[in-house]
Length: 167
Image (cartoon, rainbow, N blue to C red):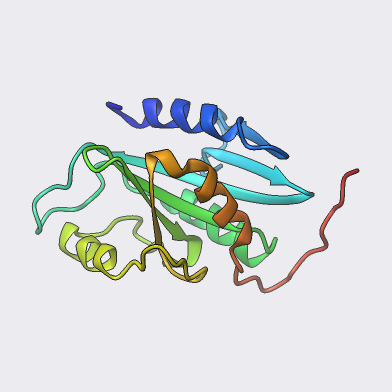
């Protein structure tokens, strides 16, 4: 993988293999903030915004060249807080072949981390036991598990909306 476009094509292909999960890869250039992936499983929605880094930059530099925009962060946090839906930001590190997933409330409002801060977070990620309130790491070969974990997330909603069951 060379860039975020390659990552998103890969993720779309892998997610479509998962039974009972519907995925829409957003391509709306006119509504800033809409997340890259809109997912549904058993009447429950989930959202995923992705970023790609070829390799980790120097410690004192910012991790992301293209940070999570304020509208993206607002969308993800809004879906969690108001809609009660799981919403993650995922950072793929190309040379590690790993996706680091952050529940929406863990994404800083400025949409970026210093590399040194990211490495501290990365070192505290439990493996293989997942705490649904903390960032998690998945290898590129574990996309199915990543999506399962996304839907298991206990989001922190203000209002926990009704589930819509589809037969």
